[in-house]
Image 1: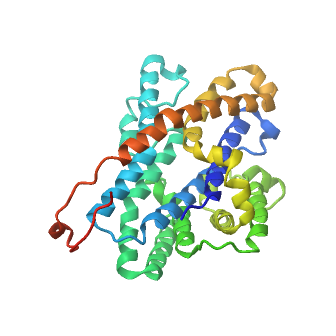
Image 2: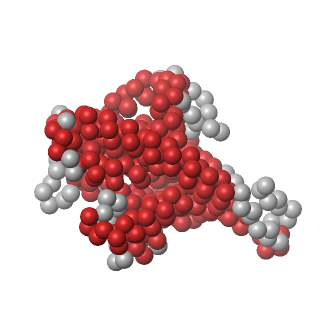
Length: 351
């Protein structure tokens, strides 16, 4: 089952990150959409990831062949462009040192990036995503053995345990687990039917999503205030309200005919398609623009330039790198494993 609105939702997530980072550097709208606002886009990405993993796989039998198919698809989705960016950034760091316009991937932290331990700047989210992929088969197995009720109970206990431990910074998947879990719960409960009141829920939670940007919510007195001893980004990840807002926004988009029309095609659908490239490529362009005084003096013009350049580069990246690499990896055959190894008589391998 395809959900067209999810394409546009990815676009919203990527644009949220770009707008927030631009706001931080140029003072766009007096920084109203910055100071942690990009974290909402990342939360939306993680919730979408949990939803899609559960929707695509959790009802399938967990066998060696289906697991390998899962691993192949996940590698194809995120790894090629990520590795290209990591190695290009490392090469630029060797050549130009701190003057590089790319990410600060140095000889000291290269292995952290390659092992999906952690990442610099926006690259931190890819190790978190891959860590979730590594854990997902455990939840898949629990679902297949014990059903959705036990799986939901396990996820609740896991999320509460992470909270009691104070949201450890590493591995990063622990801090983000509530959003992955929320997406999985939505996947197990969502249907393909449109719900009449979901149209207004979509409008309401879209507005709530915007109002949840830290500076916006603080300005109107409904959000967490920035604690000088704790960075606002950490505060956002430890505030349950954001899990509720992101989850409700996802649910509304899935069940709203309005969301399907607004987000399912056109400009937002296009940005959703290239969202991964947008996300990985926007920061170097923003850093280059930040070197020019006019970018700070005229932040709206700078944003138009940033978005235009990033959109073109992201489309080229998607068209000639991301999409071809994904197709090539997904065409790799799943090894034929004897049925006695899988323990599933008469099992068939996906073609």
